[in-house]
Image 1: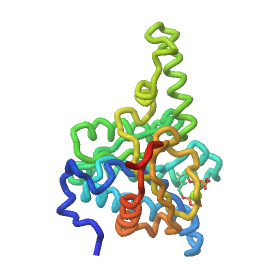
Image 2: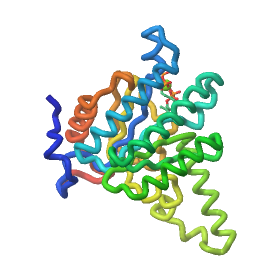
Image 3: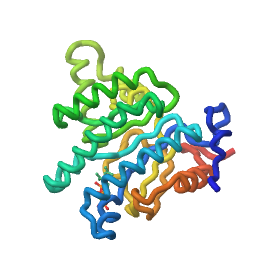
Image 4: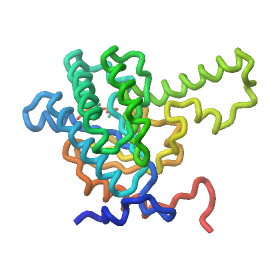
Length: 249
Ligand code: IPE
Ligand code: IPE
Ligand code: MG
């Protein structure tokens, strides 16, 4: 039985028992495929199905934001074949998402430098963004050509440009103003970051936003990840003592 009663958590409540924002580094697709003697692309295809399941589950238990790492600024280092398979999979996913969005009620948003993606993919993203605007309640942020350092540089450049244009001065910059220049502008920081796949690093994910996130690492490979693993991560999260630099009363 799942730990969280789906019905009881359907509407977000004031005394939340689930985090408002969960972020996931969807890792382990390649190893999952290798173990089955399949090409790495088969692992990515399986992983994309798992994303659908997990997004639906998160919405059902009352999570408001789910941010997933789908392709990093460093993932271009992979073979042309693998990058091509991933890009084709993103296109396929977006085509399907556009069709099913009215039924799924999932608002999709994208974090990352999208300028390096193909015109077809960018067009699909723009279309998805436009349709998404009408859906409220649950938002999935998909990180594509995303890097935490790249995001910070992008924000720093935007701020410098505003200063040059005379719209602000260096001293006017504070944490809130800087957050508003990130891809994640308007989205609260994730309380919980989950990394399946066994690695214990962030690989350039949400560097600014995860300053006080709780981390949950598991050896389960992403294509094997189930709603039960989300439950386990949330259970672990609920046991943490979050002090934010203070002292517990
Ligand atoms: C994560 O799975 C998906 C992407 C990085 C695009 P990997 O492809 O990194 O899988 P492993 O880590 O090699 O098993
Ligand atoms: C992180 O996984 C990026 C994504 C899941 C999209 P990687 O597999 O690229 O990370 P490293 O290379 O193990 O650090
Ligand atoms: Mg990996």
